[in-house]
Image (cartoon, rainbow, N blue to C red; front, top):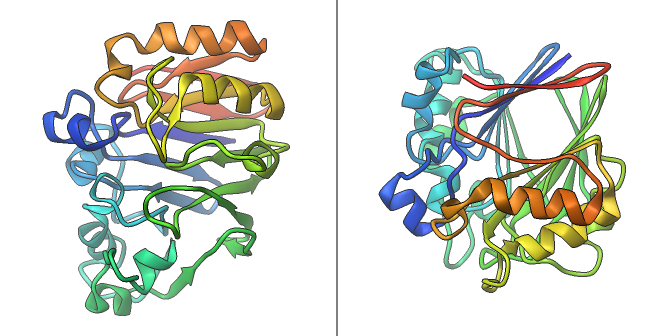
Length: 261
């Protein structure tokens, strides 16, 4: 059985600054895998609040080099490597995260030296993370190297769009997902470049048809009524859709179950 914990469900500049929701990302646990996804501000503190041990983590995925996705990554690398004393764990990141590009740079050379395995991934790359196949999926964002992922687990695929605008081929890249996690920053009718809005989520979910769609990484405007936005997606697509809340846990076994802290 896989377990997904939503450490923080806010995203974007102002949701991060005001901390109306946490911005600590997502934690995926499966047999042999404990992976932190996009550990933004507050990830470390919130992990302890949700009874997650950062020293047990063995993989960290960072979709791109914006602070609401990577800020706590270096301290979590130190936790994963037992304060830098054990060379262990895997870092998967966009080119901007791992090597840096002109406008974006995130993880220090020192911290990269602490981990056992580093993967600078681009769209279409396939690789193993603790014996599970992972595929980097495309995104169109202001960091041009941004990636999402499809993670093939024993009980199905968990897919994550990361920050992106909608584009032809995005839904196709997440085909086969049993659980589709969408970073939806803006509510219906309030689209901005490089991000998904509710109408984009409707189009993507309608094409992918996962068993469960989860909206997260929600901006200030979206957070005015996230359940209403999720209900719109569910009504328009016929797919069970929820807006995540901080501390929510989703279990994927034969059935998918949702539990709240």
